[in-house]
Amino acid sequence: MIVRARHVVTMDGAPIENGAVVVAGDRIAKVGRWPEVNDGNMGKVIDLGDSALLPGLINAHCHLDYTSLRRTIPPPASFPEWIEAINARKASLTPDDYLQSIAAGFAEAAEFGTTTLANLEAFPELLARIGTPPLRTWWFAELIDIRAPQPAAATYENMRGSFECGGTWLGGLGLAPHAPYTASAALYEEVAITARTHNLPVTTHLSESREEMEMFRERSGPLFALMQRLGRPLEDCGTATPLGLLLSRKVLDERWIIAHLNELTRGDLAQLASARKFHVVHCPRSHRYFGHAPFQPRKLRALGYNICVGTDSLASNEDLSLFTELRQLAGVEPTLSARALLEMVTINAAAALGQANALGRIREAFAADLIALPRSSNTTNLLETLLEFGGKVSWMMIAGRVVGGAR
Image (tube, rainbow, N blue to C red):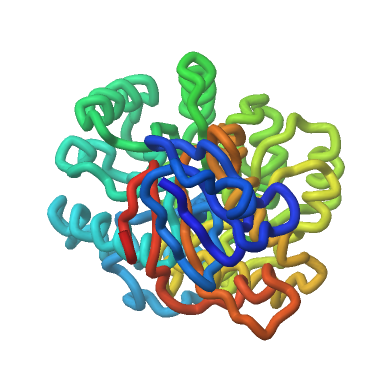
C-alpha cells in the first residue's frame, strides 16, 4: 500500500512535501514525493490529506503497572515519603488490577501517538497472562533484592518463555535493577553479565533525588533512614555519589538506559567525560512533580550522551502524552530546537533500545510504525507546530497494520 500525506517527517532531513510512504508487509519499502513514488501499480492508497506523517513515538521510560494510581498521591514533601505512599497503595492491588492498569496504559499511550514503549514491569510473572500487546513493547523486569534474592538470569529465562509463547508479540525483553538503594552490587553485576550474554538492554533509576544523594554521599537523610529501617546493608553509603558508586562497579555500557540522572556534582560530570557512554532518559513532568534538581541536557549532550524522554508512571504524572512531555522540557530548556526535542522520542529512543536501524525514522527497510497529525496551514515551521499537538492521534500504523483512523 501507499500512505500519502501533505508532509512526511522522516527525521532524516527536511520534511517531504506532498510525500508518500510505500509499505510492504511490516516494513517501509520506499519514501519520497507522491509523483515519484506512485507508479500506478502499488495497490491500495491511504490518503491522509492535509496531515503530517511521522515515525511512531517511543516512550523510553514508563511503568504501566501504575496507570490506575493517577492522581492518588499528592506531590510529597520528600522522595522517600512518595516511596512509602506508593508501596501502601500497591499493597491493596491484585494481579487483575495490574493487568487492567497495563491494558489501560497501552490504550492511553496509543491515543497520544506512542507506538513503542520501554515498560518497567514490577511483576514479570504477569507476562504469562497478558494477551498480545497492541504496541511494540520492551518489557524490563524490575529487580529488587533489598529483602530477598531476585536472580536476574532466572527472571530473564522465565520472561523469555512467556514472551516467546506470545508468538506475535512485537518488541523484546530487558532487565531493570531498580536503583542502587534497592538493588545490591551483586545484582547489578549479575544483570550486566546476563545482558552481555543475551544482548539485552538494561535500565535503572539513578541519581534521581536529593535524598538519594544524601544517602550515598553523606550517609544521612530520610532515604538513608528508610533503608536502615528496612534492614538494607549500608556499608556502601558515605563513600561516593550514586553515579560515582555505579561507575566504580564498571557495569555501565552502551546497553544501559539511565533514568533521571538529576543530581550531578562537578565530580560526576568530570567522571562522565571519560566514562563509557550510556543512554539517559528524562521524564519532564514527573521531574516537575517531585521538584528534583534541574536536569542538565545541554551538559550531557555536550559530553556525548544520548538523551531520550519518557513519561514515568501515572503515580507521578497526569497522562502518557509524549508531546506534553516535550513541551514541558522546551519550557525549561528553550534553547532545544523542535527537531532536537522530536529526536528524543524517535531517533534517540530507538538507539537506546538498540533499534537505531529499525525504529525512529521513516526510512526504507525500517519498521512501518507511523502516526499522522493534523497540519496547520498557517505556519512556516512545521516541527514547532507538531510539538503543539494536544489532541488524540486519529491514525496510526504499527508493523504495517493500520490500528486507528481511516483504513
